[in-house]
Image 1 (cartoon, rainbow, N blue to C red):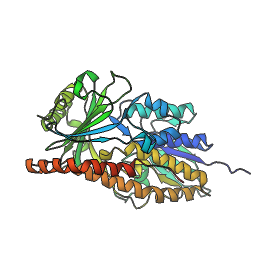
Image 2: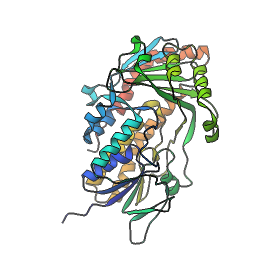
Image 3: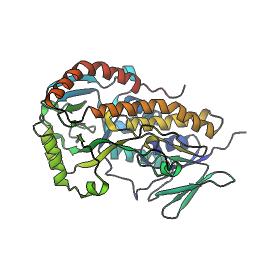
Image 4: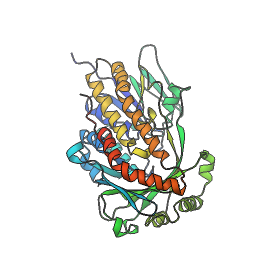
Length: 401
């Protein structure tokens, strides 16, 4: 007799939540998504890269065509210093080696694509549900309770609620919290006409190291008139409080970014000036948690492993998590066994990437002229080799064998 599939409550509808829900629903598991936002977030974040390893999961979900319609395939990474001198030009993976191409996509559009796919599959998604705590009845199961007084019952609870996870805080109130890495993050979008012809080829991602901070830009869409995304990493020893960040008006924030990038190579200042809205935030990571869950609750994605964006792997790790957990559930004797094996399998890989991201971020701190000269020479010599080695292990994801 076939065993009845358990029901999962997934808190959080970013990337790992909906992608896991899609896998589970299609395999006959009960699943529902609970999201703290009052509606699907159409203006969250800037843009992101889905690396070849993440695109393998997208193919497993059957969404490759849909993602390609909203993103730009990226085949190259070009590194410069702030004067515009090219330090290195590196392939951004290859289909022949890794099976998929990398793609750059608006975070909001990708997020909505996953939610629309979940809706088509009949997965219930409830908004305005801010997680409060969970209860565990003696007769089994779990009850997820929310700040509005509502609750949902299921067999298991998945915390997929991001960097500042409420599920994580409930489950492990005394565990480490995400740590500020000494870098502020800014970003936005500009029309294609802002980008000079010299840089207008849509495949490369452009990276620029300066004496203070870092700047990147790339095409973000599948048509010639698509917008371009950009981001800036600004070193700052002390993190802004939430109140300080909210009180920093758009004009002052733009002026600060322009000051950091004054005199940098074309079209960096032009891009910043052309941005009508500039995102602002702080970069955090969480190097390691002692545990990722228990027999009834499991953390996935950024709830389990907060990583800074400096390897471009955050979205891909969330996708890998969803695929790996689903694969383990399908072949394990119990959900509890799958939860334990998930942590054992995923922890070494994601924590290695967290450390690599932290090291990459440290290269963006303030440097004097001599230190900049040394860094540029080192990067020119080392980047091609280091990038290839990094891609070899980061971009290779084969799932559970």
